[in-house]
Image: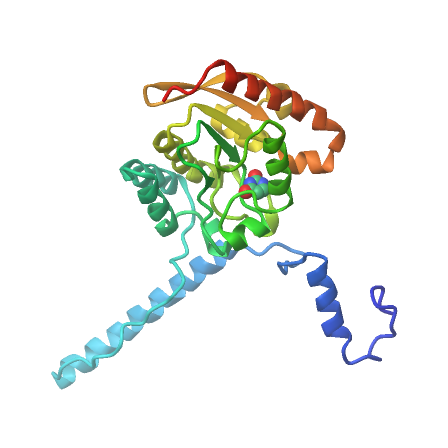
Length: 293
Ligand code: URA
């Protein structure tokens, strides 16, 4: 008996299609096995095998070339559409810092990030989610990483938590023309898993340069992951939220505050009163210290 459709196995030819449809409607967008597969080990083995086979072909063709003394056969250079699979390590973080540092504008940074292949998250993501809103805004808000809807649309905070974020902003008279929004991580982690510490370190130079180039007057970290990364702390979000701190970059120092993540508020609606207190603090800060520009 099928627990989903209630039909006896093998009775209905459409049953597999119905099961797939049911899974799609439930939001399943990734097939995973029960035991994890190390794709990096797989790709390394494939690379080594390809290198070995290329070396042995080269040796064979060298032999016949020297025997026949003819011109080597010309053929199309094999091409692949996939970026080279890399095994992320500290060097990837160094290279991200170098690349991010070279970007002289937000446009250049966006281009460099979409060409960067040092972060494995890019391989499973559909898009590089750079930013949304007004880059000239006084406030920059930074979340953790794109989810499914953000990956599809290529914009941060467009799914359910984005809709709640819009309502939170509206509650204090703001909208996406008065804030600039991005994420610590620009590529959706598969199945929305938590990014690993190494993935975060590889992406850190990009978001730090992003802040430097956007030059916001106020920074809001949405959720614990963003606050921990950007404040370099292991403190929990419930301890950090709602407190003004200084965020330093280059020779600048700006006001920064962590707030509860809208996705957390969707799961814990009773905590919305805490989010409201923090939004009021943000509004007071905006009104009491008018724009520096
Ligand atoms: N959660 C985030 O942290 N960022 C998004 O863009 C969407 C959901």
